[in-house]
Length: 94
Image (cartoon, rainbow, N blue to C red; front, side, top):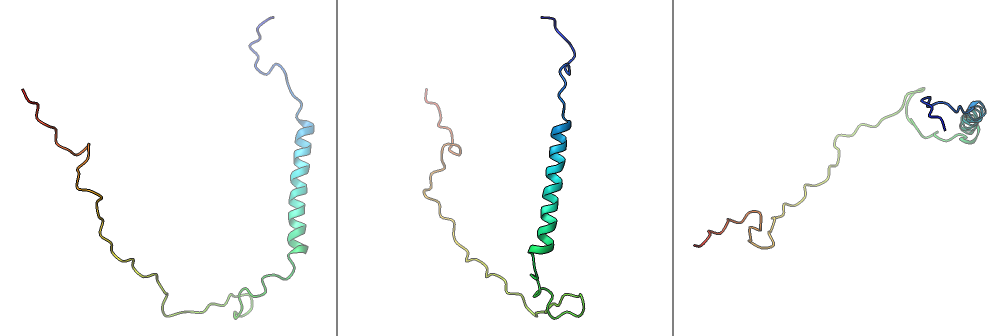
């Protein structure tokens, strides 16, 4: 068999696959738009209550409750051993 340096020797036709992909994406976008127009209804009527016109109402507060500081705990070591990495090397006896 003869070696061919052309890596794109066999071409695939993508026209049909790209067409289906574009149609699918358009259909998904249309479903989302139709859902938001009709299925959402009158939700969100409570948002911005108390505001005038299209403004959103807000209630100011004098303080914001913050969580209490955690109690300080003493870090207790399980044992007083320095461990392998922190121990002093033993002198070599002759």
